[in-house]
Image (cartoon, rainbow, N blue to C red; front, side):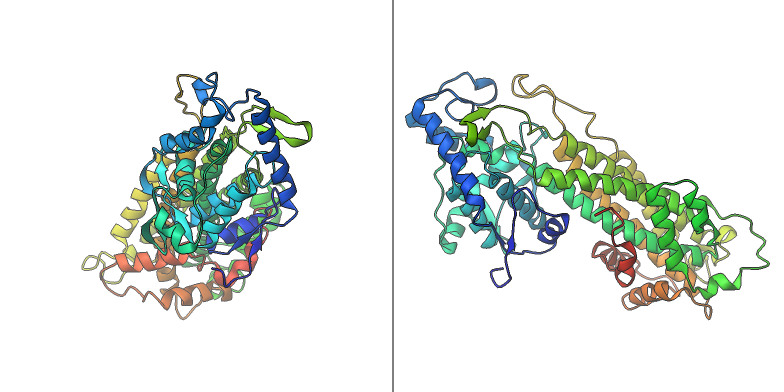
Length: 515
């Protein structure tokens, strides 16, 4: 990790490209020297409050419903330690390293803005464990997305205390041992610092950003496979005419239609049925792709804008305003914007998969596609893509349930002090499963559409789509007879998840989400 040039985090000014890079690879991080003036001023303000003896929430009081309980100065360090230990109550699978990197990076960036009253030493220790590849073990369940992601961020904080377990190179290690190996001293938290570390929406936001980046990949892959399916079914490119989309005016639709035109440009298959084709209109799953996928593009773009703001935000409580020597209690920890972004991403991911499943159904139906039944010769003896489509249908249906908005749910906590919550952490968490479901559906469509295109040989698809076809065929052979099919689907799914399906035509998607 230290072999690479560090990415300097500008507090409050991280770009989506930088965030995506942190998600994709273990790039080392640094803070600019100028950030430390605000950090130090904020920490000094907390020290003055403690010295004066002024009552301030979370600095020298209890938490939540216990905010009226005053804590003696000599117990303030113990108060912060107890906060972390008592709040480390997460459960479920551990968050993977890519999302943990995002959590750490966003927490560092937020704290470094100088509104959290935390010492530079603590922030530098977070940076040190990140750069040493020490990933805190953070269970994925246990937050309702309000008052901050308290439980998961407490598990994150355990690592710098030398408590609990961490992951190093994918292996579980005791945190105390990992810190010692890396030459990092455990932190003793001062007043306000524990609360600053565990208040905030960084876990909800990281999980939702993970969903956003996967959504981008499945959308691009589904656009490519959808164009390939048009050729496989000998469909028309007339519905992608720019004049059709300009009169409606939806920006995602206009942009997406252009991509379909570019993908299909130069197809010999299309040229072969420009005249004397008795069909008047294609089914919606072919014809209405710009309308559906364009709407998904707009949702993804809107979610990206919200999440970029949140990734740079200060979301703990209370906030320190050093210039006025003032502490203000607010509610920036409430993750409603993240929950809404996650819910709209869920809709987009589900619809991408739903439309792809319909195209698979079309391709295997010889009465609609004109291709061999179930895309295989000697059907009857061979079942071909029959049950692969069943898998796609099962996953598309599962996504319908998962797409139910999480943000409409709320269950009060903390003896009704926290009486409305966002459920943003679950809203973001379920996107990973949904994206993998849709990636599998799109993978099956890729196999089916490629199979259909091969059935038209010696006629070929467009140059861009032929590159996609050839990339697939390097890993998965033409389906000439029944064989163990699951490995083929998995290979195609990995192409989708890695962004390789749209790799040869990735430039077509540049700027698609308004970034």
